Image 1 (cartoon, rainbow, N blue to C red):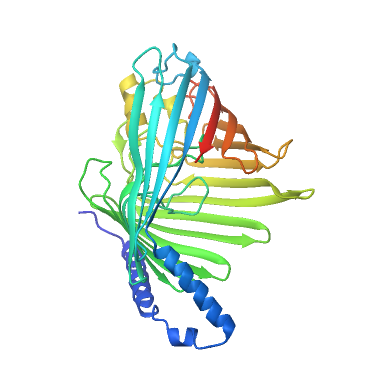
Image 2 (image 1 turned 180 degrees about the horizontal axis):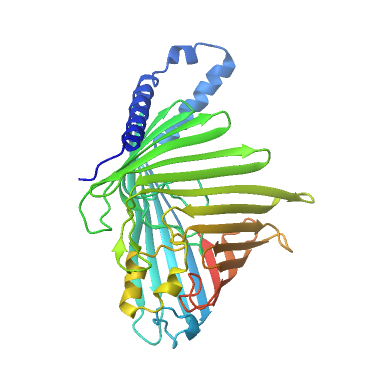
Length: 436
């Protein structure tokens, strides 16, 4: 059995005490004296009480809401064999059409009980082979509560865990990570139960019992977070645990300095839970030392003329304490295809495997015309100096239920780098989305 250091147990004990104390305080502070709240008898209070009663009656009504979106897009890309690091690119195919329909079903029952379903239908027409049709339940959960003091969400769900824009080192819950080339994409949820215990307006305690089976085990994972407000700064301590894995402790914050929003996350574990391929022996291994992972970012809005917040600039840096300091793609290029496949399937995590990364995300509203928006995003691997760029024009008329998007994605780097190993240096995307 691995021997734990003193600092490990001190940190673990501290987080445990924080969570237990928060739970106790939350349960103790939920009693409200309604006689004091509604002791006044003038007409204004009576009218407010009447309005409140009417709203409560409406919220208690049973109803089913159906909304969603239909998204059709055509993609075309350039294939360049010299950039095909794995040698698995399809030289005969350079375009594809995909139609995705998301049905969002919101079911409201009595006493604050509700259910939500995100049903995804995917259709890929292909003249060269059989057409593909797939049905996927991305989210399916039920919300209920105990006396409006403890709130539960049971089922398949996407959690907001971590504060940074792209990199979230404290998030070990969500399996489906953010897609750099489609940041607005709806992610697939994870099975589990979330428990939320609020304590006033400044403190929250969260617990999550994960029941995912991504790694082929039946073991449950456990996560907890204590969130609190200090002045204008929101902070949170978190912890994650699963059998046969190293516990991971986290801290995140978000604040505002002048007109700039700042945020950050750090995770720490006594040993890594992710495999790494040794650069010399090419053996898969897990680091046994303390592993920090840190992301820091900011967002600044700029006015232009009479248009408020017309330009948005978000920057973020990411540090992986167990990341590669050399170009691992160039090192592994001499190995057999099977070893490369092993690396991709068991080690590689997009834009997270090297030690240093930087990302820039920008948006310009009302670009050239009032209904047109421009976005330019870029991520750079500072170890192999490769860059992925996604730029797009989004046309959405005011008060309309559709949008048209044209996007150009490009990958720039040496023959063997993170950005270029897929063999597709350029990718053009034209899509239309309709909401109902």
